[in-house]
Amino acid sequence: METVVNGANTGWVLICAALVMLMTPGLAFFYGGMSRSKSVLNMLMMSFTALGIVSVLWVLYGYAIAFGTSRGGLFGWSSGLVGLGDIVDGVTLDQAEDGVVHTFGLPDLAFSGFQVMFAVITVALISGAVADRMKFGSWVAFTVLWSTLVYFPVAHWVFAFGVAEEDGQGAGASAGLFAADSGGWIVNRLGALDFAGGTAVHINAGAAALALVLVLGKRRGFGREPMRPHNLPFVVLGAGLLWFGWFGFNAGSALAANGLASLAFMNTQVATAAALVAWIGTERLRDGHATTLGAASGAVAGLVAITPAAGAVNPLGAIAIGLVAGGACCLAVTFKHRLGYDDALDVVGVHLVGGLVGTLMIGVVADSEFAAGYDSLLDGGSLGLLGRQALAAGATMTYSFVVTLLIALVIKAVLGLRVTEEEEVTGIDTTVHAESAYELGGIGAAGSSVLPPAATPAGVRPSSVEVH
Image 1 (cartoon, rainbow, N blue to C red):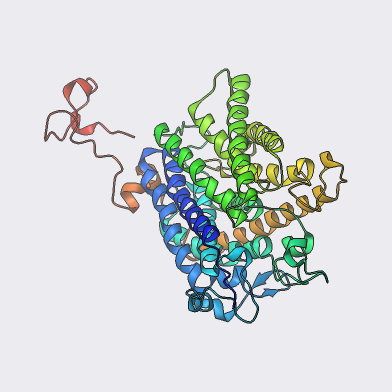
Image 2: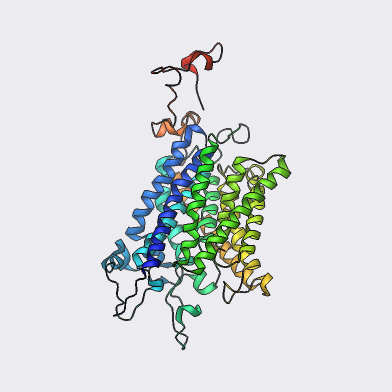
């Protein structure tokens, strides 16, 4: 019996899992600040309920679908993984059994704990598209159905590498050889590259957001009334937390404390920085000014785009990806006004478009020194890798859009999707959650329940002043 658990790798992955968990509260602040004050709590709640619901589903059956024995490369299933039974039973064993050695010396339970955080934030990403108008109970139902029917199977396509087989010289997994049909079809059969979830997370969530808002409909006053972010400091705080947590998202996907993790870490930093600069530069050229919201959004666009490519490009390639993503996503967020769909907080413009940019640019700028066996256009290759990347992106986008559309239509027929017009105008926070994000009654003298005279508009009774 040989020792197979590597303490350094295990500790690294557990720390990265905690960083990825922090991204969901960070996303809640990012989205919450971008929303209107009358629905900020609802935005926070959607992210936090995803954190609760998806974590439970992952233990019950999510891990079994995503990483169980592959069924034709489309989804997994292993009854022993229901409730994480098999991997919990062996969690205290540090020795190989029957010659089976854990990859990277990483306990299965640590890997599962890392992956559940991906599942959580993917669902939470979708919530930004439906701000101000979706029933909370319908969001809960959507979270359960979408995680089960869309995320868990797509995670299998992309992240389930399958069982390594020997090439006759003992190379095994190091040679990139996997037994036929032992893993997800995108990674195992197609051979497309997605280091940390450009397809499974961002394209998946972006396509779902588009389908959901098409069924849900536009907010009251969309295109006619200003719907500005109510708290830009919240937006910047959320973006900062996302940037911080994303090092766990990308560098942690190396599954080891090694050189590949270091590469992903640096690529994450410089791609994000380049996208931030590109976004505010585009704003400056187009509108005559650069904005705080643009800087925060540009950073997120860069984080999205580098996710699939973090382990396949060199830092110069990462900068190129960031520059393209920052400019493209800045322009893409205007699509909703031109095409008439109401993606409230630009999930489509940032996550779908950013995910597509990152996934496709692997075929252009991937470095064969890191992506062994894959030759990009700039590394002397043909269109083959770009074609595989496009197929992976297109398949994920199509599946997510179609299944999400069906889920939304079913929920609309059974539960209804939207709050009433009165609830939407008044605000979901007070009408649905019976709470308000900001208690302003105490402004002025201690104990006062009204605004001070100087802050009360002339001719308006203090009790009728309303803050939106």
